[in-house]
Amino acid sequence: MTKAAVLFTPDTLILNDWNIPVFQSTVPAGVPDSIDDQSLQFINLNQHLIKNPRTTYGLTAYGESMLEAGIETGDLLIVDRGAEAKDGDIVIVFIDGGYTVKRLSRVGRQLWLVPGNKSFKSVKVKKEQECEVWGVVAWIIKKPR
Image (tube, rainbow, N blue to C red):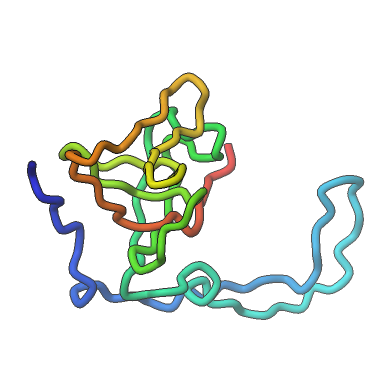
């Protein structure tokens, strides 16, 4: 089988600090209310979104197999290749010569790749298949419609 292509080498990546202003106030998601405090603090998005900078990358999702898991076409997935994949995690997987995003499921010694859409079937990973987890999805960034 074909080996997985190297998506990146961590030494070639340069992460910049993404500092954004954030109001101290909260905004209600129910009945409209005033925003009392308009003071600002700055937060660094790298510190909030990225646990392991040298092993983290982003991918844009497409397709419908993970809709019920909250992943839609155009969503930016923040993926940590250094995180240990655990049962139930959403992961990027290299299998059968290609990449996919699925939920990891272990039943006894058997590994399954489970879609987040009932219209799709789970994939039972067979011993003879090359299957490698290429990272755990740490965040899903969506653009509101």
